Image (cartoon, rainbow over all chains, first blue to last red; front, side, top):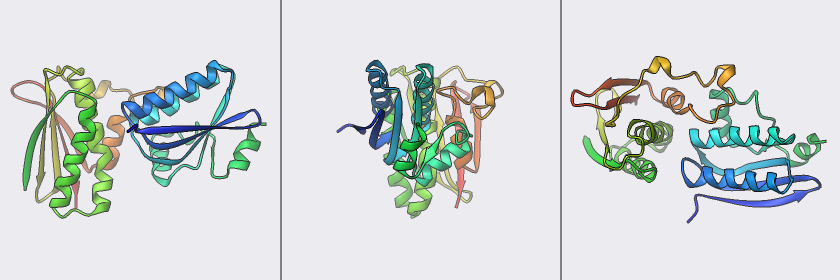
Length: 115
Length: 134
């Protein structure tokens, strides 16, 4: 069974990736990396990561969020985060990454922020 | 209460170690919250031993010791690598390092454990000792 499943939705020109599972060293991190790479290859560079279903993330997973952020920015796009669990929020605070990412608790608000 | 075991230097060993430590902690009567609080540090220490200590060399094992002591829960992870200088590990919270994709494992170990210290093993390799007080 895969560590991480990723579903894709489109809301106008914003692609929402609904993540479910673990973003950790190994499979999970690789799955996220591949999904972002594929989207950028398709010209989709407005990306909202919905982390409501991410029960676990480690330093590799955090690193993958950062890599995704920089990869999307490099392509002139924007990547934002939605529905962080308290645990993930705490980890982003420890790593001082809350100042880097745009984080939202409401999908409509997140989508509006892309424009 | 004490347990020792070794795992091969593969990424999959991180999950296996976490499960073994989870079981040990529960047998020791440590609660759900306690187990949850040490889980990330456990995983990061084993991942570091596998990736950085042993360079994913499957001929080198990661040796793990778990113990309930007067101090609390104690874990030691030994790799068979060349060692490293903690002072040379970049601070991942430094603005110039914030956008690096790696380097946060030690930060998490230190955030979630009360004691984290590294020593060289007499027979080679590095041992990280972590303690979480009850």
